[in-house]
Amino acid sequence: MYKKNWIRWWRRCIWGINKPMRSTHKDLFGNDVKKPNLELTLYADEAMNRKCPYTGNNWHYICIIFERIDKSLLEDIIIERYCNNFDNSSPYYQKNNKILHWTDLSSADEKNICKRWFDYILAPHKSDKKFYCYILGLNESYLNNEEFDPKDKFGSIYNRFFRTAIEYGIKTLFPEESFSQIIIKNIYHEQGQQQHHNLFKWHPIDKLVEKTNFQFETNEIIFLPKDHNNNEQANILQLCDCFFGAVVNIIHGLENENSKRSKLKKELLDLLISHIYKIIHAESLGKNERVNNILLRFFPKQKSRPDDILQRSQNQFYSKRKLKYHEENSGQLSFYK
Image (tube, rainbow, N blue to C red; front, side, top):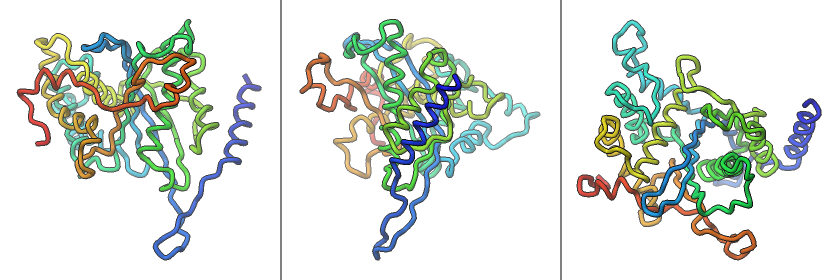
């Protein structure tokens, strides 16, 4: 174990030395201006085995929220949760102190917390430059089985595409030319089966160190439960779970639409649907209409063989896709309000 950690440390030192980022850029007068560093904390969650209502294909999803350290999302989310009322003797405090999990959303109190968070996301004057999110959908039915570990196919898929999601999300949401260094201070992930994978805790970080200019102040991904009473970072993991779960329901539709849980969720989905519609139809919108802080991508566009070099060399990521919830409720919803 000691030797393994030493080798990883040595590789990071070498790569860090050999891949410097430019720390200055020119102003209008040609003078050097030092670029700021960007420090980020990442929060991640996953959704497994979602059946496409149109094709029957099996889908997995990864969601990552990127928090800028200089523009605290966590502080805002906690304020929204409690309506800025932190008196724990107040009856409203207990109503607002619920642990949220989208799948189990079942009470008006839970729905109201979630609604305040969604309203925050949709309000640019509140969430601008604070809420950044990337959701990646993976069509397992189009992936080649021989490219992944047959003993743990999902773990193998998730490990590879998790680091892809981190790299693409950061490079798209935070262009490197704007910053001297991009520093990732911590990566938090909801507790789940990934924490038992022998590579996942450290392998994505090591690969990103080799491949990118990102600097890491952590060697391992940290797994947290969703109880914010024990760790305040769990507030963003709950936000991630709820926003992520809502987007997946917009894509795949709600199960058991007449259940109490589905009726609570419909109000929340109706809040987000036009926003998600704009994201997946960004190419047909004007620049001022586009949503720039949330990315939604799917992979791959087509099934290919490992030896099909031409097809595999083409960009297989895409964003436009049918939204089951939209189609089921299109007569009741008005887009671009």
